[in-house]
Length: 242
Image (cartoon, rainbow, N blue to C red):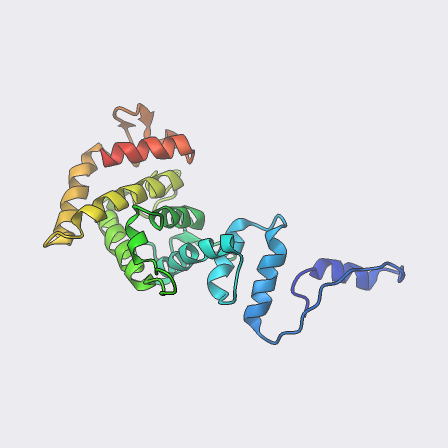
């Protein structure tokens, strides 16, 4: 099997020059996971789309470089959100390999939102395994499902639209609401009724949001002027939390 270099192999098979020296890296393994692992590592230094590498990571259980390990868990949670029928993101996330997807949210937006929450002070960080302990992936997923289901219920008019029609579905909206998730979920997790507290908090904030029309007060931006820049994401996050 040719794990990487199919086009070069085809070109070499058709050349009349049989004296070309061709360096080859070979490995013996019937294990499909090892082949996936090698494909990712080989292409890591090439201009292979980062989103495609991230999409493949959940399927690899072998050892990976540290930077790829950090990207694996967010990608796994992103997959779960996309395929779960009960998820507010079900079939809404665009993956690189699925050209026929009708998704409206890029997977990188979801993954970056999760990556931030996995850092210290993020709500998902408390579910990370310490030392040799396993991560509580189910616990992380339940938090994401709980919060984003209520976001969908609070802003139904802005949900399941393209980013051109709703900035809530835009990378800036997803990531800014992710920052709010960390703030809100940390505060309500000790509440006697977290669901009611979350609903109350989001509905209190709703009149100040301009996802599909109008102008964001104090920010001075029209709804469709919000961009996926660090400056816009930071300012919008601060506005939402305030």
